[in-house]
Length: 258
Image (cartoon, rainbow, N blue to C red; front, side, top):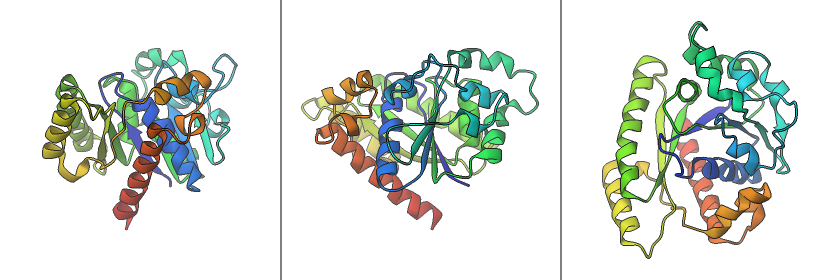
């Protein structure tokens, strides 16, 4: 079975999608076979990888509802070793449609257990809420990567997310762990970024990745070109930071499975 990492935060705009696609790209470049599942109805991960969502393709919605197998929804990206399951606006209604499904929290896990064995890693881009869709991602995952924007209000949301992760662990997925917290949109010229970093490192200790993701215009521009920033501008500070983060993620993976 592949290792499954959910990228989650209840707050929007903190860099979940950017982290997902760029860590996946760097993993693929390192020779890992990677699948990204876009579970956000907005479909930003799909857009960021240049996937045309207007076609009649299968989506993560179909996987979640059991309407198709995982392999039927997979599309290949221009990055070797990197494929993805695109999102669909129908995901917004999935919560209602799953109500009558037996053990609805395990719908995604069931689908991945049937059909997810041909990958080294599966990364799940979660929606910015603790919906039933997000719960499915956390139940299916081995560990959670939490992007945290370097702003004061972001700190309030992360404590709730950790409580949610512990609740999922207690009730549905005892093996779920916090893989790590990554500080995003970091501005070293800004005292607030440094204060947030200090608070987060004091609270989470070694769970915080050493690599921080800087504010970088290339990171913001890349999705409009349908590319991860590593392909859009490999030499920019954002790309180099995500390469460093991916190395840390893979290093922790080696330690976790040792």
